[in-house]
Image 1 (cartoon, rainbow, N blue to C red):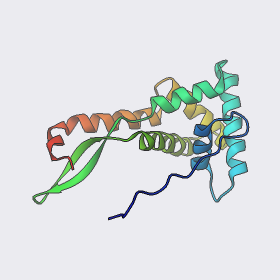
Image 2: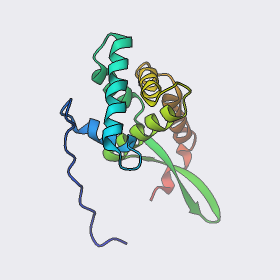
Image 3: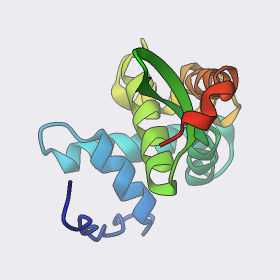
Length: 155
């Protein structure tokens, strides 16, 4: 076990929107340490979202992240030779992290031409409560609901 909890690293706000949540998202989006490329992709996606929806792009993105953020998850626990899926509430930092990672992961799997297009399309779908990322959240909640009977095994 750990002796003490890990220190949280401070996150600097991004240059355009001056928002720490954007920086966390861009850090998840970044591949091979290329942060400037990730920033460009994110800003282009936000511009495309605002262009297509007619609303503020950052607000649509924040709404999308809130829509795909899970409240509970299931964790496996072995009890007497059987493995049970036990529903557990998620702490706030993990909720946000999971929502962002799902959004990016499903955007990468889309068929649009550029990553900015894929990300913009996934953000717009998530903001309207549809798309693969929102489905993932719904499936996670449904699984937790189905296994609610095992919640007394919580550790």
